[in-house]
Image (cartoon, rainbow, N blue to C red):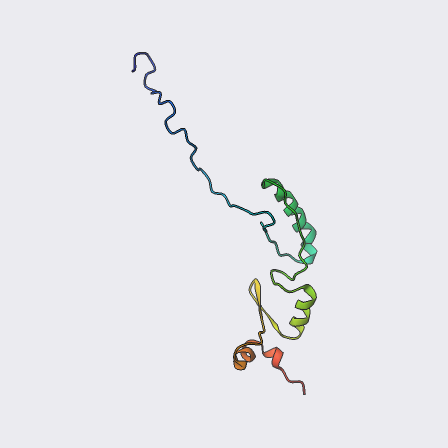
Length: 120
């Protein structure tokens, strides 16, 4: 019922009171990796400081862990350097390709010629 001045605004009571989604979120488990950064050793301190400052943008507690692996590969630093000298690793953009002991020999020789060089 509208009977007074200012009746252009209708009272609708609790209509539409249930909350509406207005953003997207990611569900994260405890111990799950949130962010991975690959950098040169000379920029390690800068990367750690940047990650420390970014912790304030996320709720909860986060740990900064420096990996012992080489880049995003599953190899330790020492293993990577040994395999690279032996020609068993080939750089492929942001990742590497590994020489496998499976598959046709011609295929592996074509992909990794340094690993099959004969010393005379």
